[in-house]
Length: 220
Image (cartoon, rainbow, N blue to C red; front, side, top):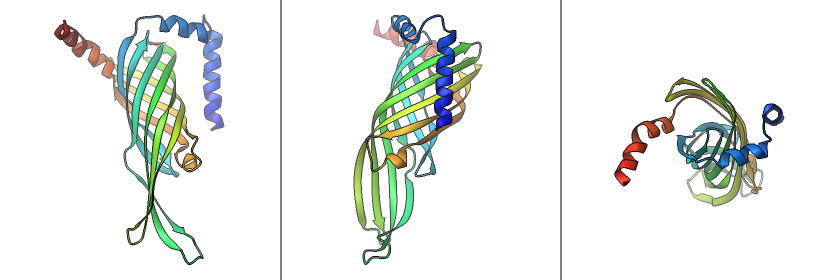
């Protein structure tokens, strides 16, 4: 985790040292610009209880000059994570339990683009939201022993890089960390590294090219 924070701070300081304006001035300048609509799929890989997990996401919001994006999104653990353990070992209540863990959360994202030149883009997405983690435990006969929901605040910090192959197709990768704050019960389960890589479609490009004018014309 220290490496992630070190990379984040290095990129932020490097950006600030080479920028013509301070970080505060940059936000003031770009947020004063007329924004454009932005929409994207935002899946990533992660871990829940040290098990690989796929989190699917969808987000939309406003894009300010290609420098700052203010977005809201929803994220959901694609498949539940299971864990088998012995409850009350060595006591009369000892039994084998199967634990099922799920994760859903809403999040606000601020994407700050550090570098955007040619086909390359380097950004720092920071997320803060509200989530619900659920846990169901059953014994070997299938009887439910626990069924609870746990609220938490997801905080995510990451570094992402994209290479534009075509106007609508990108190759990208990212690395970061998700904290599940204010939940002693599941914080250790859902606090974990996050990473992603692969190809992505630029939904915003299709929106601007094929849908935006048609919708504007229809509304007039």
